[in-house]
Image (cartoon, rainbow, N blue to C red; front, side, top):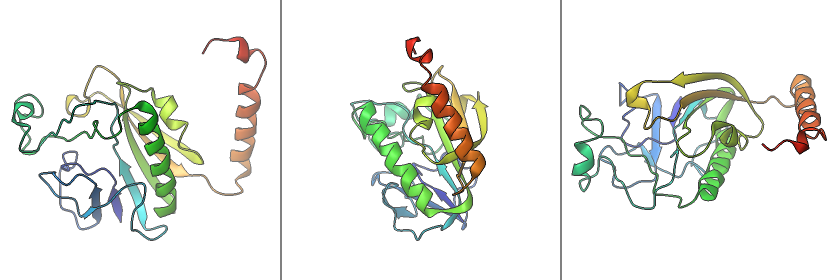
Length: 199
């Protein structure tokens, strides 16, 4: 079973109604309704329910509401995704500040850790329009990055900033190699010479 944790109008999917994908979102005005209206930081699913989770959160903050694909967004329809029946909804008006967005990402990854199977995959999409990827990955604690894909497709990139798909898996408890790597990174970043460098 697969979870789309930020369904929007399902515009990233070529096939939009597969029975093995559950689509969730909290936005009530979407043109394409999710399978379930649910908050991705507090889902109704049992532990270890999913083989894969796709997570395409807002990548930046805007104060005004921009409802791509809603009835009051006709002007945006003419500019964005002209060939799509339902333009993308980004949700960039939901959080109000970078701190609130980062807090949401942290809560979401904790929930994903609960509902993803032990050998499952989390696919994170991120665009560096406002926040660098390394800062975002810092909140994905106890995950191991398996793969990073650099995206250049115009339909997947909202700006000149780099877009990524990052594939993560849950760290195995008691994994000695992971513990050793974590210890080495801690030692590295706490080195006194590094503290003098302006990062």
